Image (tube, rainbow, N blue to C red; front, side, top):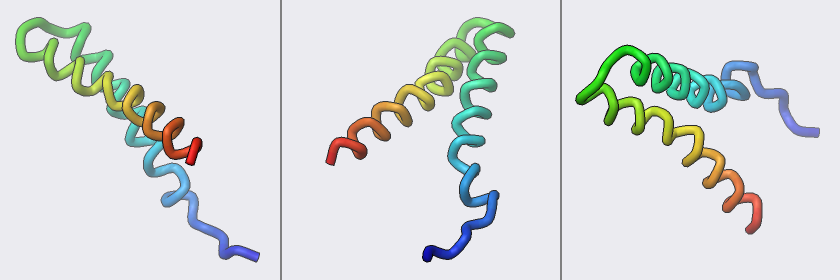
Length: 59
């Protein structure tokens, strides 16, 4: 039987992806200019994580 992992290690990456997405949405709504680029970068994190998860699942 495998050893139990603490909740912090289980939810660390999902929480980081959530925070990046939320920050991207807030940044996108609050301004223009450099904030547009920052919001695109932050909102690409969940997409990149999903693509990575789908690719690693295939192999």
